[in-house]
Length: 328
Image 1 (cartoon, rainbow, N blue to C red):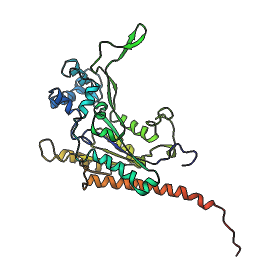
Image 2 (image 1 turned 45 degrees about the vertical axis):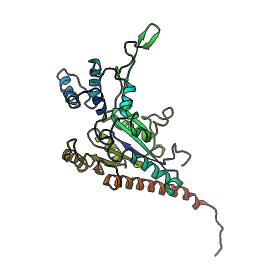
Image 3 (image 1 turned 90 degrees about the vertical axis):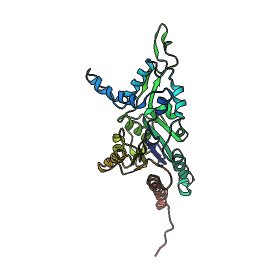
Image 4 (image 1 turned 135 degrees about the vertical axis):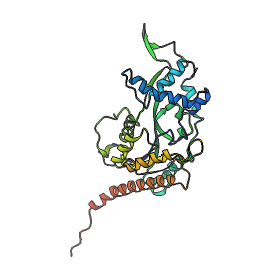
């Protein structure tokens, strides 16, 4: 690293969507089961909201409208007592696609234990960027292997005006009451820039919006792989791929009834045809699958390129060493 560089740039980052990429289903499935709520009815209602509000000339975000619908269910007593602690507990019940979370550990350990990669101090980090619920992710099996997560969050006790200034609202104690943070298809790209520039690791020193040269960024996009199933990930796919990173779409092989899921496959193939992704494969990360093989291959290629750049940087000084001059 030259004196002017901010970071060593020795990180390989795998950035994951969550729902149907890491998890088998939408992560909220355990929530509906715990409260005996019809999952399909909830999502059907949610899908109607954008049109219903449009009739009132109110524009809503389709990616995150479901958060308000959850709050509506709480007010109606259908999610009675739902709070962040409960969400984290329910996260432990999330079911994952084959090979997860083992694949996350395997890839991280592979780079750490590889003789050449460890000699150059390369590391692999996993990040999760999801339109789902951060607290459920924090309670799930994959949290052990995640370097950082971006997701939607709720507030239980909002601060309200009081005689002495802002005070916690006593009317809200043990239930979710307000939306704190949302992640949608466009803010996913902001998360990628935070990883890229190192703002997530050094929030006091680095602002995601500051000007920063490519050589000063913690994780160049060329050292990233973005993995997702598609619907809310097109901007993120485009950003990573355009800047030299790798993109991979996963599809579900079988639907809940055990039938071949041709729609999921077609969606992934469309992403490939449109140039959004470099490759696609089933959401199965077990050894021997195309998904396992391709991702490991890309990790190797990124790591080897990093080693080559570091070898070249280390060796460049040798050409300037003084040598004995021999008269001919």
